[in-house]
Length: 116
Image 1 (cartoon, rainbow, N blue to C red):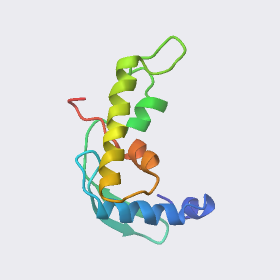
Image 2: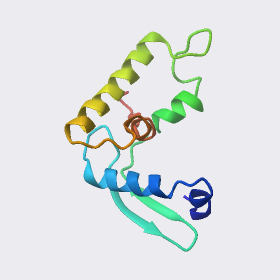
Image 3: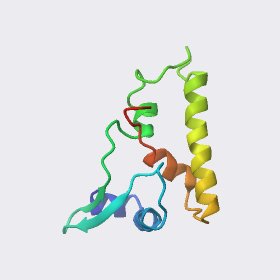
Image 4: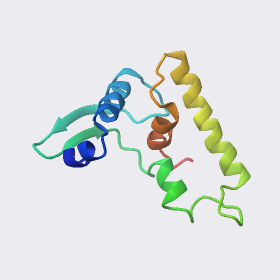
């Protein structure tokens, strides 16, 4: 990610908090963070490879892949599945006292595996 963009969007504390949380909390529902790097202009997070993409992409960018209602919302089965995944995140992070913006972290880091 661009350091200029992070500063411009005032996300410095959020980037550091997410890095710290990913280092601190281990879950099968969240990508593993292996290492962080930086160059003069960029920040890099070396994370586990999970082919399929982020849930966020499927909700907002790849709308044709997940079943939708006529008004564009998620179909009931898909909504129930993703709500259950979010609930699993909430229960896990509550249990280990990690309260950093659980829904944001969950939405950005839930990955769709080939089995999902």
